[in-house]
Length: 407
Image 1 (cartoon, rainbow, N blue to C red):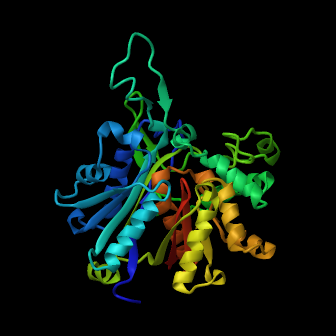
Image 2 (image 1 turned 90 degrees about the horizontal axis):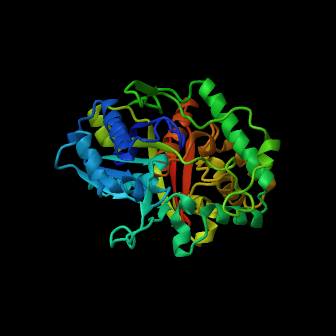
Image 3 (image 1 turned 30 degrees about the vertical axis):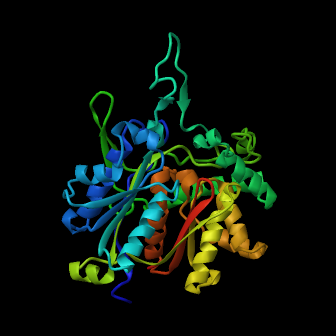
């Protein structure tokens, strides 16, 4: 143990909501305020003791009506002092894990002792927009065409392929079949249900409850994820049409368009000892990666490979993996690459990965997911009495993040 170790002392998230669920009209900024307040309240940490807040979010059209600097807005709305330092991070789905990496670096450099890394998204709250050429600069008598920001996640507007198309094509290229992806999706749901029945996703640990006002002013309390489905039929999944012309990706082997927020307090070990706070986990190292935009499904493996080379660790030392299920194709392609083509290693890695279910079941509110997979990994290692884990995530146009966590 080193006084300058970067340790996690508080970590939580809201339940993740469905596209058309309870949270569909709740602003992502408000979800972020909720987790920011709760993550410090749980450990009785004064907001004035936080040196920096990094906030990940990646669909600016959703918070556009509140203009800019959402990180600054959430800190002020959460009661943090006016001199709080904050930064909004957009690295697509990687954003809240990038926030962790930036906080890790600040602590290691001695520029900060206490940092909050957080993220939020509400994909069901994204508005349809009117282009400036019609709305800003006037329009003659007639209708104005609206654009759906969520369609293809906008990548097609500048000539990039939809990420679902790329992921499916790369999966086929690397021998990850549609059937394998459907089976993994079903497994993700069954693992979540088993974990939930064992109270692994409970309020007071990874989950905080969320109370909002319903349409009639009634109070609605949300305490569990909305997306997980029961008794999925592989046969029925196989009959679904693929999306955006992808050869393999369907609504069943991909996550939904979700809502939710997550937050983690990290600090130096010496600061945790000074404040008499329990160390939940240690971030041993962080690494990022990027590559050919088409090969997004490969980039978690690339980030993990770089991370292991950086630390001198080997795959056999890793007890658990969390690889975000942007699609089942992403997790399976990355595991296959890490296994270096060895089918036995591939099967072993599958048993160690997303053991409590992944984003296909839990949900993938993109700005919140990097921190979510990190805390899910940490809490499971803690339940097992400790160990070494790796969390990794991909982001649009082939970006990636990975970290090693010890408990």
